[in-house]
Image (cartoon, rainbow, N blue to C red; front, top):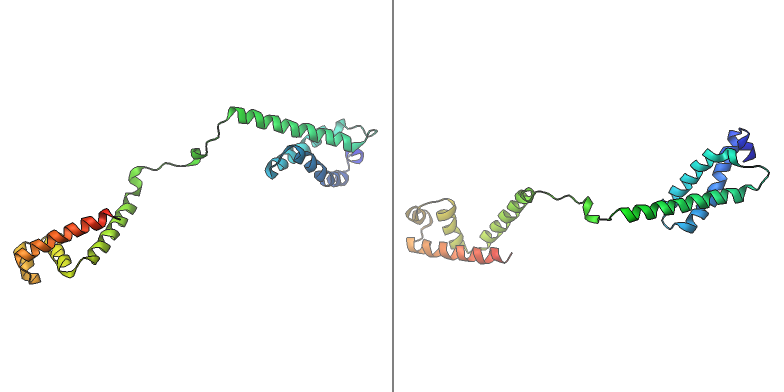
Length: 172
């Protein structure tokens, strides 16, 4: 440290590299998380750079450094306690709340897929009657001519198909 005070950049760089384990040990005595320990180490190194002119070369260096590190570590604890006393931790504050209408497209696709699957599960006669009368909007007479089913048979098949679809889609 005395050589660093005299202006030797190489000695100062070597000193900083060699004292980090000691500073880390002092910080680990007060703090548990690695990020908090790293913050204290950086704070001590910055403080040391700022106050290096106050070191007396006639006295031992390690106790002086340990005292500086201990005080900066305790200062970090005090800051943490003050911050925790004033701040409220709310994990949900980082969540974004979307507009309820934002998921309509996805829900519409899911509903369409479920409907297509339910339609595919219907018996052929019911499916054909429903497609002709309800989806293609044909009259019963037109649908009867296309499908070969009687008008009464079409009515019954459409009714049964709608009833089966309701039951199937309620259970999904």
